[in-house]
Amino acid sequence: MTSKGLPPRVAAGMYFLAGVLFVAGALAAQRPGFAAVGVAFALLGAAMWLRQRKGRD
Image 1 (spheres, rainbow, N blue to C red):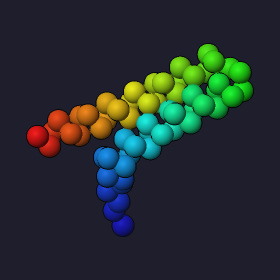
Image 2: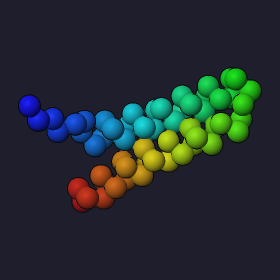
Image 3: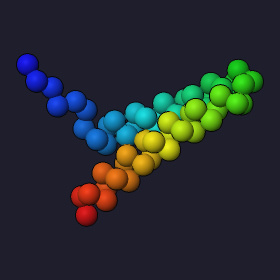
């Protein structure tokens, strides 16, 4: 049984959303230093989305 995984747009969206939620959780817990991890996840998701769009054009 083979699996192709998630479509690139879905994976990028999930990384971006995870980053946003991580930032929100870090700020709610008053740990702003951990928000950098969330920013990194959000940037990774945005980069994945942009790379996927660039390849389509």
